[in-house]
Image (cartoon, rainbow over all chains, first blue to last red; front, side, top):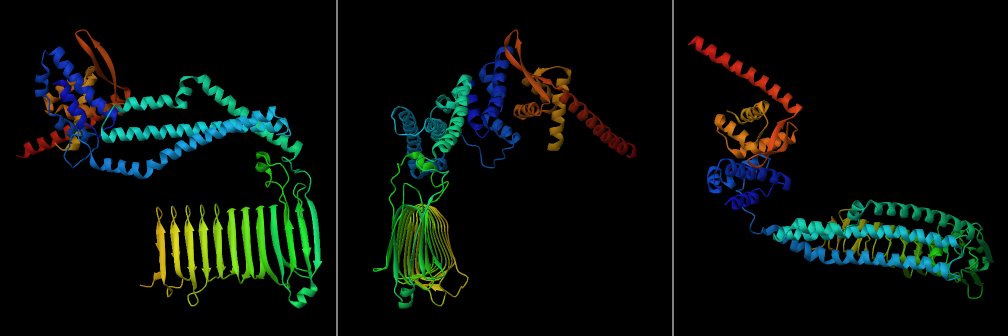
Length: 497
Length: 107
């Protein structure tokens, strides 16, 4: 009788927080105890004396500021909307978030073991590192990494706990508090609270790690230079030049081809009648410059013979940049540019070309003031592609992690592909002479077009937004196909019906 | 009685009961119920609200012939609130009395 009364009341008081609910239930618990112990009543007597649980709940909820106009209902049954919500969440979010989180934690944990093994391996296997300081740096780094792994683990546990609790609440099963407690046991933070020594160990380790990273990093760099590269020493400078005044007079075009493992490439206009090639290079990656006046081809090549370990990669590029500058006389015609560099930026400005073909692994590509009559192809793996005042016919630009940014340029057709990065176009053609087609595709990034006059557009992004607006409202596109999966789409340009 | 007035009076009732002696929730309810005729479910949230406003404190007190009960005690803040409410009430009552006497005198 008493249990039933209290349980019913408890269910009606569901909107309250747990502590608020317990306070009220305490009163009634006491009420039963008093009545039965001191006044010799039975539980049934007391229930008869009291108001119904529903009336009590209504008064209490009102007093606590819950003004519900809907009649109270017992929450014995399942609510529909939370169930629909959680099922949708499971189907569309949890289904990838859970394995992704798990994968990230395991992956980062694995990387920690790799780092640690690497650091210790470096101590025992001669020749891997050049100095004990590198080992110390790696050890410190791996401990910092471990902290990151632990933090990720905590994050994963919190998320899992939340997920399980939410499911239990929605489906009204099991003892949520017990599960919550069980999850708390899994948390590192929990054990640190229980065993203060653990926290001290962690703090000491963190201090050691930071010290190791700083001391090891600074000393190994100052002692050895960065890995194989000496940062104290200047880069070597190599230079070569050829007089091309006859070719200028005869309108004979030249070509430039590069195949570099390492180094920036800059091609610029200059006054005079000489092609001047200047290379700033590392000892490990000297550039071979071949200038052939018969075939009128400039070829640049280098091979990176240094040891590639994580140390080189971590630092080099931060300090000095190797690179080649090619100065071409203003009046000399250039035919084809075929530029390839593994690590370096490419910059070309001020030419009329037959074709352009640029391949970069890590580095950005900047093209300014160019006119290309034939093939126009740029490939970058991790770098941004930027075009300013470029006139091309068929553009084909692709980058994996970087964005594409085109301004004040013209083309007939353009294919732009990005995986993680945005695509931005501004001031392309005009309403009276629009371009034919534009295909812009990105996976995680937005597509933003402003004053872009193209007849046939295909704009695709998976998790970004699409924005397309033209100042000249008289322009009507033939066809605009836009598709975004989780982003917003804002297109103000008219499409021909 | 307006809701607002009733609420103020309820606070005053609870405080004046506790001004005499510390006691438990059901006892407070019974004392008030004898005068105002209100339900338990109105009193309990008021007690809880006054605890959260630090006007009252609770402590468990053992009883020789039953389980321990939660007793309510006034805090110094509660005492001050009690004095203020009491003065406001007395001023209010004397003004109402004044009106009634005036009305009786004229009739």
